[in-house]
Image (cartoon, rainbow over all chains, first blue to last red; front, side, top):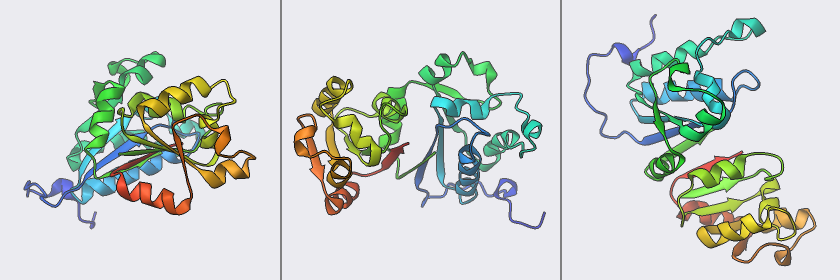
Length: 135
Length: 100
């Protein structure tokens, strides 16, 4: 791969000009392109060493469910790419508690390490952001 | 910060999710079909009155007019804005989260 890959960059200096970006993932995968597009935007933000927070709430919690098989619909199997977020120093992955519970999911159902937060906690984090992107 | 809602509460969970997350005292702007959420005539009106007390609530006037409603059709505590006012609210309220 000839493209610059910041995940391979040994320079771990913090980007002091980083802006705080929050991505609010609210749609189920495959029924629309929303979650896939937001995932690409997260990776781009990570590549530019921005301070990224990802929230999964409402049907967005299904985007990170284990065992997805996009190939069953002849669609790109994009869920494993969430595991690459860590390589871009995107480690603040939060699932909204009520959305998870309403769908009968538990923390073990997710394919990345996530932290459960209440809606109020997510609301407080939202207030701290420079930019919020959502779908 | 500013939350924007552009779906009717009868159609989508946009407003419900917004209210779960939004801190009291923040601004909520209703636009497009979202304006149905602040009408005083619907089964949602009591909820709209509550949120008008807890948040700074705005609705886009032209979106109400287009749907056959005016300032008398919304619950108390909702400020109607035109497009210039809409821009001012966005500029004045920090980060924006759109619920749709």
